[in-house]
Image (cartoon, rainbow, N blue to C red; front, side, top):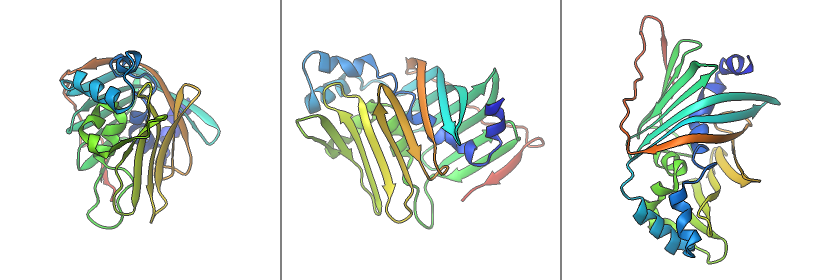
Length: 253
């Protein structure tokens, strides 16, 4: 089983959470987001209207999504569940052949990953106290899960009145932008690049698929995700407890 073998690699443990969650909603755009374009409303007018139609959505649950990772010329498959509660948590579970191999959660300050194969719980601050920050933070990850989260940042958007709506979130030493297709309001490109560390997280739509690239999780990888069943405004209990006698706890800073 290639999936189970590869998860034992230290770097791979972070891939499903920090990358797959960015893909699930980009591969199947919500119908409500596309309707304004169908009625002739494009650009910022269409996006603002899509925001008004979705301002009651506080959580998103995606189940039974399939993800494919290509890494070191190998191909790995997992089934995923993703849950996002606005401004609160992002949760992911990855299952292979009916067995959960990984469970992860991020809040505004930290990431916790449970590696069930090796019985290890990893934790890391998402915002560092010292040194250079990661190229992404919690808000960045949330914005990539669904276009609706961008509705709180309309002041950072620019309509080129040609093909794109560009959101810019630049921080000290970090260039951040998300580009939507002006007609369909689908995400076309996102780029997060740290000028001091050369770490990056990038994605682009190609031939109907959305692919992600990064070097701050591993040296090089490519990933796509398809399918998934969506429901909204559901409350689910995120359980991250493990038996402390059976697991080793490691903090990464």
